[in-house]
Length: 473
Image (tube, rainbow, N blue to C red; front, side):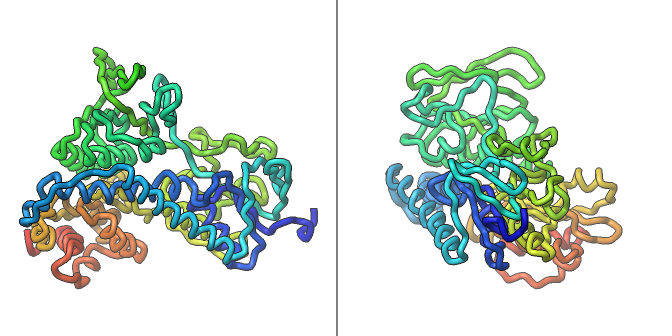
């Protein structure tokens, strides 16, 4: 098939953060672009049932918690807070609509064609969507990920379904019509803790069941230890080294069977609702990748080269379907890069500097290596830590949970990783990411003037602590 006979220069499958960004960037570079998306709205999981609605509810529930936990009273502000859950959910839905509608506007502005439906490969340059076929010189797989199921625990997000909406995944937990009496969260990772935090603030009793010995798998050990302390202090019941082996629903009650991860006596936990949040898996079902000879790795992911080419000529992949952290901003950067590669330019994504954030209160954020990872990679490290308790702005705000930790190579002083627990950690981590992108040393951060009084000064002090010379500790 000659180039001029293709319907499009580039066709992207999926309109999540990786896909819609790739489509817009490809169009900006002068390529005739289409994007296939089966949802009624653009934006993928992130905008529709992930990042955006969860952050809306996190923000709203924090406002309520400011009253209920006595923090406002500390400042002499007394009030009585009343929850209107319907209004809260409506505002969340409005925020989602604003953003998904914004992407549709950008598609029109950049002349990206939205093909509605599910795409399945016919060959490396042809996909079928419904009854129609579409061809492109280059096709990008950006189909994202979906919730990993847990054997023995059947999810049903529909209140009128088999389980009456009592056992839900993250999508269901974002649209509950009532505050649970007792919510059991299966999985102590990012999504489980964020949504568990939302419903705890809104009045639910929350129990978190985690298979491992600490919360937040993958984060630095010091951060994980701090998370355990903080969430227990906030009132969550944390069950570590435990696994859920089954669940049954009877009326408005869910009975879970739980046993020690290492084996032992089984116990039961009764709850009004259960959130299954044990991770996500790549969306590849229905793509018919066998038709183009594309294979998956052992984790069900599509392997790519550094430029996001798959082993099939003309087929590329980005985001959650390829190896690496399943994060919207990683997918976005890869979406820009793949479009630039396809256009004959050089796309750049530094996978060693991808920040991650847990949007609870306080927030947990990191970028680069954990201390253990740095040592395993052969580095001799120096570590600087600075508590938020000693930060003047945090202390003035009565907002002192957490710390900043900077890990540097002992010989070169180059920053290898930064880990932050603080109310503004998600914003603070951006400075660390920029510093690391430019190859900064801890001394570079330590001798950069930071505005006073700000939470960000804690990063400066932690960098100074690498050399053993923080001022305020």
